[in-house]
Image (cartoon, rainbow, N blue to C red; front, side):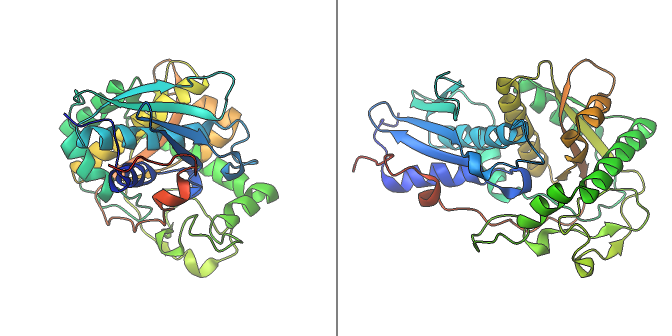
Length: 328
């Protein structure tokens, strides 16, 4: 059984695993602190990395931190700890979104497979083939979401077309909204030169059939990066929902999303996130597909090229100075 004293390489490995998670526009809106006396890691939101126009409520920020939280749980289990997790543990500290205490021997199922997948998972914004995603894999992904307190629906062709139309309308609005377009462009070319945002090589082409409304991070300012290609004829979409729509639910949605993405990666299935319609309240309300709940993410699943990795901040960059470790 591991002890509660962390050496620096192990701590940095845990944090590196956490920050391998996806985040909206790759904003990486998180910061970590270790309490060495209780072997507890704190996950805090970094408000200045939020998207004021695209995500005014902070919902997507919470989902992003939830993804990092799940990766941290997986990494802790990989090292033999039971990750005792508390979400929103101190109401007086709204930026403290979760704590993870490293305790006992892990009971987390699937940790080795998921730990390997978290280093290989990358969003793919490129065309997928028309190869079918097996029903058994879709069932496994649905079970992965359910294990984290969320639901995942895979709609049929007619409902998929409706969801794509909603996403296309949201993308049209985003491009026409000067504030949102400017905010999106900022994460293609961070003004401070920091390794953040979505790198140009990770931006997929546009679909000349207009089947897949791929987010235009350049807001039509970089047409050379938006060469049209054919995307799949029958895209596979999935809608991730939660029963309630509170901050805690947003976090759990992120954890469910990341488990789904890691299981998909382990099964050789690529994924991209169609978040656009979630950014407009009236369109978000229309994303529900057949059951009660609040939509938290739309996923596109399929077989195709793996997307390139997006830049990540280092463990030392996101670990609070007061999170020093004991030398073991």
